[in-house]
Image 1 (cartoon, one colour):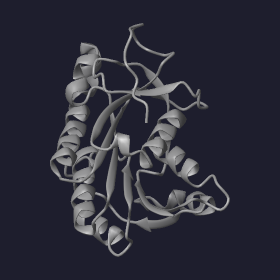
Image 2: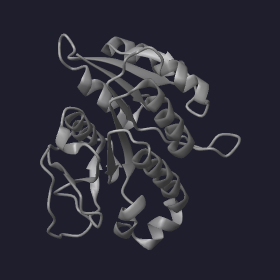
Image 3: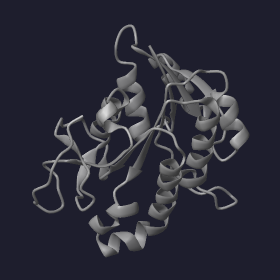
Length: 224
């Protein structure tokens, strides 16, 4: 069984990932989830996850959470509002997690980011960048920190997110010009598929629903 550490599981894509990883009876993975807010602990423990608490913006909390757990794969979907000091989990929290993963000998690191970050900035309309440009820059910094870290990584830049049932039509592409909509449950399925795929190692993907593109264009999908 793989030991997986998930940060950002309180809601959204992270919660969907936790559900998928633990849906088998008995679960096929040992899942540790990292939470800041205790509100969600009961539901996550009911799914079969082990919960550890801390603040991702505190590097000591992250290091303690990973220490001694022999984690195979770290998955992070962290983001959200800035702290009182102006730091964002999108960047500083994920950077702290990357550094702790290096120290702990983690084998693989999966970062869920957003289309519009890094090279995929070309896929986003100018008016969207006016609203979300600062956040996307923070996500880009975390991506680059991961690429430079020496860890085996997979970066998944999701399209515009909806909280609806999975469509099964989600795909990964290495084409940074593609943008569209994707359901959170479908992003989670792609993330879980990447956990066990060596073909996904050291790749940067955009994740979209093939039937919900912003523009109807041809592009190559990536088969895991």
